[in-house]
Length: 253
Image 1 (tube, helix red, strand yellow):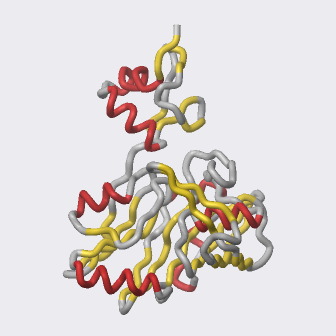
Image 2: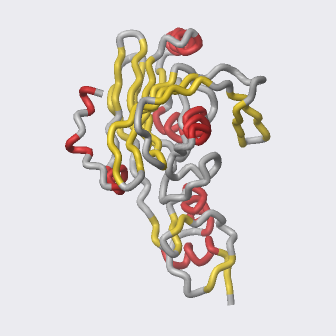
Image 3: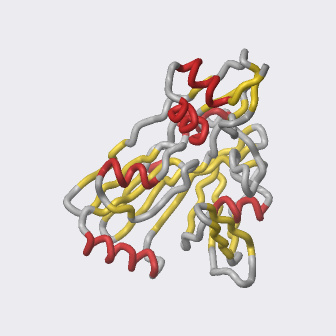
C-alpha cells in the first residue's frame, strides 16, 4: 500500500497536512538522502523522512532607512518582507541564501532603485560551482526572460538584455570550485544561467545546471549602495565539499 508523501510526513512529524506540504515545497524534506520534490508523490507507508530545520532571518543592520538581513535558503523574499514590515529593495530566489535589503522609507527606496537602474550598486555572491574553474572568467551574454504565471525561465538570446558576470575562483576541492561572483546587472537567474552556460553550473541548481543537491549553493554575499556596505556570512553548509572557510579571509575578497 502506498500513500501521498505529505500525508506520511504529517503522521511522522505529528503536524498538519498543510504544514507537511509547505516543508516539502520549501525543499526541507529528504527521503533516502534525496530532496523530496513532490508533496503528492506516492510512497510506501513505511517511508521515513529527514526534515531540515528552517533557519531564522538574521538582521545584519537596521537604521531609519534600511534593513539588511541574511535570508536563509528555502525562504521566499516576500516572507521576509511580510515579517519585517518593510519593502523589498532586491529579491533572492527561494533557494538562494544571503544578503537581502529592505527599505523603511519610500523616498529612499526610490532613490535606491534608481541606483540599481544606473548600475551604481556593487553586488557579489559566493557559489559552489561544479568543476574546476582554473582562472577568472568574464561572461557577457544577453539574457531573455520569459514569465508565465508565477514562474520565470531565462535563456541566452540576442533578443535579451545585456548581462555581465565575473567569476573569481577562491578554492578548489574534489572537482568543485568555491567562487566569488560579481554581477553588474541583475537579470532574472543571471548567475545560475551564466555559470551553466560557461560549463560550471551552481551545485544544487536543478533548472539550468541540472545538478541535484540538498540545497542550491548560491549565497548573496555583499552589496554596496550609497554610503552603505553590507556583507552576509556563509552558513556551515558550504563546508560540505571540504572547503576550509576558516582559512579564507573574506575581508580581503
